Image 1 (cartoon, one colour):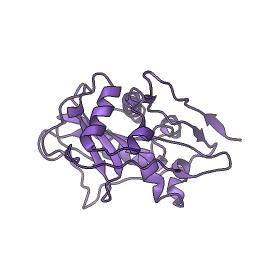
Image 2 (image 1 turned 90 degrees about the vertical axis):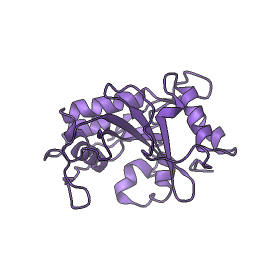
Image 3 (image 1 turned 90 degrees about the horizontal axis):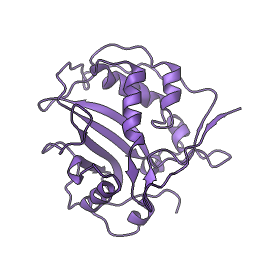
Image 4 (image 1 turned 30 degrees about the vertical axis):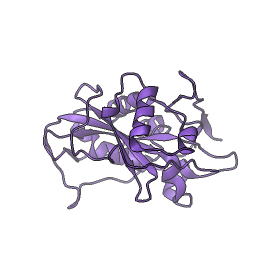
Length: 239
C-alpha cells in the first residue's frame, strides 16, 4: 500500500498556481540516502553568512533526460497511475557568504532522519538531494535538519507561478519570465530573481535572493544567472 499525498493546485490569481506538486505519491518505503561529504572540489568552508539563495528547479526540464535514471524515478517516473507530477521543485536554501565565497559542509552530519525526509519529499523529491542540501548548506546555519527544511519548504510553499504553459508558447526572454514571476508574487521584485538555463536555452532553475531575515532583496552583481535580454524556452513535458 502506498501513502498518498495530493497537493491540489490553488489559484490566488487567474492563471497563477501554488508551488506544490500537482500530485505527489510517497511510497511506503523511501530510500535511505548515503552520506554526502566534502571533497577536494567541494571543500569544507566555515564562513560568515551574508545572505541566502532559495533555489528552485523546473522539473519538466530536469526529467527530460532522466526518465530512465533510477535515482530520479520518484520525481520523473510515470507509474501505473500517471506517476508524480511536479512543476517547480525545491532545490534548496543556500547560505551565501559576505564575499565571493560561501560557507559549505560546515560540520560532519549523520543521515537526515527518515521522518524529515518523508516530510520534505513532496517539495524536494529526492532523498539523496535532501541529504546533500542538509550536509552542504544546512550544517552552516546553526539549526537542525527538521528546522532547516521547515524554513526552506515554508518559503517554497509561499510562492506562486504564472501560467507556464502559456509562457512556453510565445517568444520569451529572461526579463519577461522574471517580470511574470514577480507579478504573480507581490513583494517579490524582478531584481530578486536570477534565472539559469541549459546550453540549449531551456529554463533550468530560478534563484531568489534573500537577506538574512529571509526577505527578498536585490541580487548582487555577478552572482550568477542569465542577462535579462537572453532568450528563454520552457519545456512543458508531454506535448
